[in-house]
Image 1 (cartoon, rainbow, N blue to C red):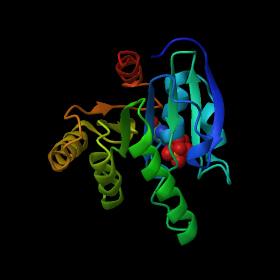
Image 2 (tube, rainbow, N blue to C red):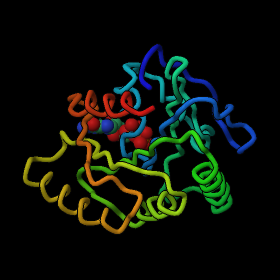
Image 3 (cartoon, rainbow, N blue to C red):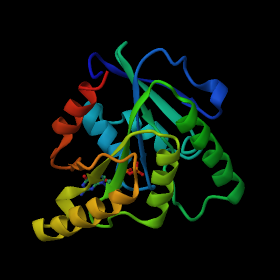
Image 4 (cartoon, protein in one colour):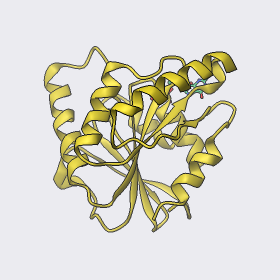
Length: 195
Ligand code: GDP
């Protein structure tokens, strides 16, 4: 699934804007500021690819990137930011719900969790949605460079424990840092292995 050049396709604001479901895709979800754009940029080797998704006005869009002809990488809107108006949050929640429940080509979701913070309530909400939508998901710990090995052990233990509440979760975590590149190749290989 990970071959060929990576290109921004479009930002989607409604279900009827989704590209045809004609190839496998993976999606990335996480709280705002978790490091999602940085990780997508590191994964794709394109420095500013996911920046578009972080600019005001684009943050509520589902951003599609093409992995050559073979698949899509899907950047979901960051969640959990306090300042968003209720109506905006409701709109993206509806879109997210419909997307997760109604995308037959979605092979796996990656749930990004900050290594320093572990799984919070808002993360559980998304994971419950993934459970209900029967979308298999895998946790990716971000910013691994920001904590030492002891703290990382504690985070891994907390997350592993919390994941037992989620039937759609893979037990294996992926530890990453966009700054050092740790885990990026491993994550790329996981995506490449999906068909
Ligand atoms: P997003 O809102 O989830 O897309 O998060 P960004 O990718 O924009 O990152 C949020 C902040 O965290 C930025 O200041 C990044 O430079 C920083 N950041 C992201 N990934 C890493 C990482 O792996 N290590 C460190 N130290 N900082 C990171």
